[in-house]
Length: 492
Figure (spheres, rainbow, N blue to C red):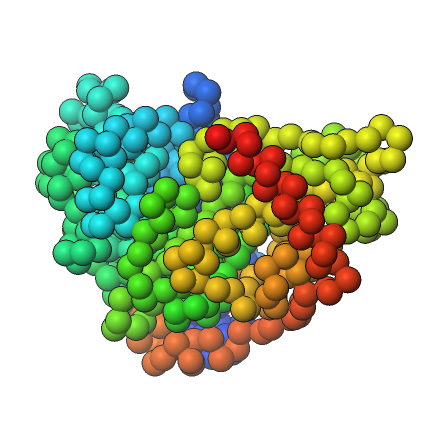
């Protein structure tokens, strides 16, 4: 018996089959095989066709069937998805336009105006966030700038809601999803209709509310005919990619921290205290958890992490693999002999108060520095950006004694993970899991197949533990102080 996990990212869609008895992944597939296209009609825009997500998912499931795995044994389905996106559909539940995805920055001004006119105090007290560049503001942008398109909108959804609809025929969303779109009132514990009223968006455009962890709807006969998944299979878990990453690492309780470092980087800490950052540099959402007590996730996002490292490989050392690049970087000393890299070259950075400061190298010496210094400074700069945001999270009461992460992307680099552990004075625990497997575990738990979180995570395998290096501590702290000065100079 299997649990199916679906992870809808902006680069690809991954599907995984979790053997429920053993808790192990038996098969996975990722599509497309090269990075999924993102449409950027104008500067700062980012759109994708929702139909493409469905097609990538179906392609992966068909690969599983060809490999000999019987999708008729799927007993539960969970969905993870790229956060903050907007899928707007008409009465036939067909998208009226391409989805505006998470990294699209067109609605920044819309959210800033809402913050001013509604009032910062009210927004932070009720939403724990600025309306910012999130789903609510994106829909308001469509209303204000594409009135003919908006007139056709019947319901709006997040990317995971759309995939759930295609599987079940039910147009639904979750409270956690609404909070990701800045559409949840934490003070009143209900939908934030005061924000949509301000935008002039009618409450009828909301999808029906279902639990994030629990049976939401059941798969259709059409899905059985197309893919072989039994009709009536429960869709029983749904979460944005970062809450789901934390869930997949068994980060469920206050004080626990999860991190990712792919194209963008994220630190996600769980708290039971609803507290907002006054500058909205980090954001608070409802966390997906089996607890009956409210749990919030405080999310730090840095756009320019793995993409900065990939840029360095393409332009500084195209002759090297990533492991070779890491080895070259370690030949430079901690602190990179004074060379600093600010990795903020992938658009507007929330942690910098929605500023776009661009990536920069500072302090390069044409005599002393070679490519080893550049490569190390890139990885240190990425780690510095994590530390910068974690310092903000500490002001909200979160202290990371342990950071959990999947052994993937930047966390494959011994240099990066030791630098981060040393800077944060925290151990880093690496696990063999990913978003699709987290969604699969969540689905089995939500469907009642696993009876507790302890049972669901009993097979989660810890691969490595990284502790701070005292010999690196002082040079990294000195470099970080100079780096922080350069960052704050650029935003003030």
